[in-house]
Length: 124
Image 1: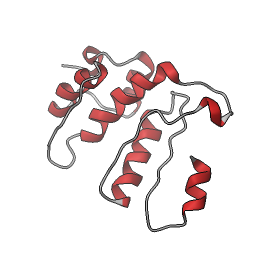
Image 2: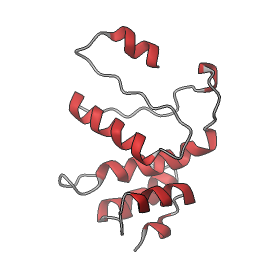
Image 3: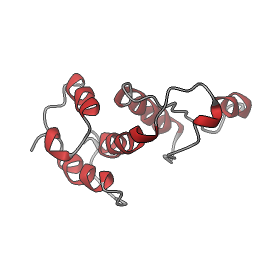
């Protein structure tokens, strides 16, 4: 199986190729088509098996249709919320969203506790 067969858009397939992903991991092969179809997925796999890409890539693909290049905050409502248990994981997921979504005109933001809230509110 290849990423080409999972139903991702051409621009995300290009990003996958630039990241040098050759074929999807088992969790990616199972999850990506389901998330693209709008299904809820609960997956468990060991560290390093591509779980983040398994949900971020199809979420970005689904959000592409709503993306725009406007600078107006009114044109950028919250369209997805990813909850994680730790600040470190939140930062890792944010980095993945930015990496995989570099061709998609979305504005990701990471919010977590332990720091002043005002800058985070401004980012949102």
